[in-house]
Image (cartoon, rainbow, N blue to C red; front, side):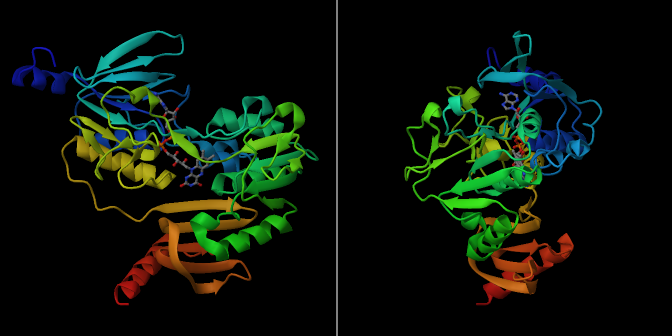
Length: 388
Ligand SMILES: Cc1cc2nc3c(=O)[nH]c(=O)nc-3n(C[C@H](O)[C@H](O)[C@H](O)COP(=O)(O)OP(=O)(O)OC[C@H]3O[C@@H](n4cnc5c(N)ncnc54)[C@H](O)[C@@H]3O)c2cc1C
């Protein structure tokens, strides 16, 4: 800080806002926590998207099923200065400024007392743009996909993770002929063999086709000659959908001195602290591993806000993840990917209604068990394994 001394540092703290960059799960929970903790200074929330925050998980579920209202989130707390359509382009750690651009292209800088980096992820793309493959990260993406899905078209979904399967479910529901391809069976990496087998069965019963392609898709794709797998097989597609993971949206921090992992994530400690007056939260950050899930991003935003205010972070709660694929509701409490063997606690997997447990995670598959009882099952399981 030029001419910095204790007095001017205090002035910055009192007059400059806390700037939160990224207006989604992590960013909004950070501002909510700052307000809830009684932070008296200004809070400015910069969001690249042109609208208020919305529920991203609902995009690939209720929104594509026709329920647009399901994406609504509660209003931001009063007093938060929200600037939609504002993209942060650089940070100067020494001067403590964030530079940003608005939708007219005009740029400006803002001095911050504290900075929360919560810029999330963008979809990883592996197909050449000439294929016109669609994916879903934003409400605009979901709107484009909703209008492209029609009965009787051939849809190929690349990627059989949660998102790929949810988008395939939506395509089937619209009457399309759907093929899903992946290098591994559906959800096997995250939920293990038994749940993967159950999902595969449901996928087939829904009329979709799964193609296991251990080599993945060909690298030298040529849109004019059609979409090819590495095995040489061509799949006809009126519509290609890509759901092959995501990449941290942190390129705007390159060269700023903020530490970035080789995978592009912002590196922080467990409390979200990145450096002096800077914290990170949500999908964009990692400490020892990444947890790119909605409830993790919310917990992370709260933790980062507390860290910024010098308050102790709460003990981490188990992660929570849910999905709905081919009529299967899957709610998982604990760490993903699951570890160890699967044990059925209630119901049975053959009838596709069960509560199951692994080491460090429990799940309800089409089972109405309330979350607090799923949590108890997780705690009981932890107790058992600690006595083994
Ligand atoms: C379709 C879909 C379905 C999902 N379903 C589930 C689910 O069922 N369960 C679950 O747990 N998780 C789900 N997820 C994952 C979950 O949505 C993410 O983990 C969560 O959104 C992460 O929140 P975040 O705030 O860290 O980042 P994001 O939600 O990615 O938000 C980051 C925000 O920052 C903005 N931004 C980026 N760069 C800048 C910049 N330079 N300046 C200003 N703003 C910027 C972006 O525009 C974006 O609005 C789903 C994700 C998708 C895409």
